[in-house]
Image (tube, rainbow, N blue to C red; front, top):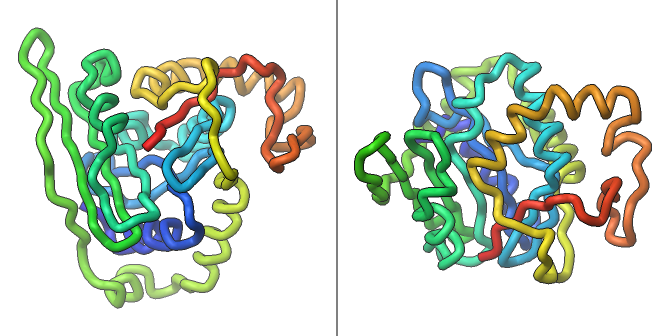
Amino acid sequence: RFSQLAWQKLLWFRDRGNTEIAGWGITRIDDPLLVVDFRTILQRTTASSYIFDDDGLCESIESWRAEGLKPDQFNRISIHTHPGNSATPSTVDWNTYSDPHIQGSLPWLVMMILAKGGETSAMLRVSAEGGPTVCKSIPVNVLGSFMSIADEFPDLRFGDLKEEWEAEYLRNVHPIQTIKPSKQNKRLTVNDVADAVRQFTDRARVRKSSGSLLSGAEFDDEGFPLTDSDDSDSMSNDD
């Protein structure tokens, strides 16, 4: 389920460009299947794929933790858009979320897709320790109506929100012509997110002494921040 405001943000990001856009659903601590925000991560995108930046992921996790969010609030619901009319998961999507090694130690996770034409899909994967693993399609519901946002947030100015979303898009989403296959590129997995959660404190110390990736960094010809090494582990999901 999506709050109306989180849904409007996801729709805006879907329609902002002509590529896939990926991120994570932020949920309520007392309602882990209610998405109250959609957050993007530094990424390169094409019409059929996206690649997360591993340092960008770590920075996002650091920021979310600083807000007081718990890992279960931001690493359970993976969301991405399709620029076409179909929200049917690709072979890569299915393989990713049917692989028991991808889920790691988490008891459940969700992959949700929103297509340009409005179609949605969501797959819930549940694993019991020492028991069976079940994958099933679940419905996607949106709470309230657009007008209900004003009732819930009377002081909210939608124009200001759009400015914030535009800034987030320009900061995190970097469309490119193609994403060439690379040994360094791998799909984002739940284990990657869990590892990043564990490592974010150490990385924060490094960035504090050497400067942030996004502050004072050099950029490549595509306008994407350069990492310290060409062997940095990018995370990708190719549709």
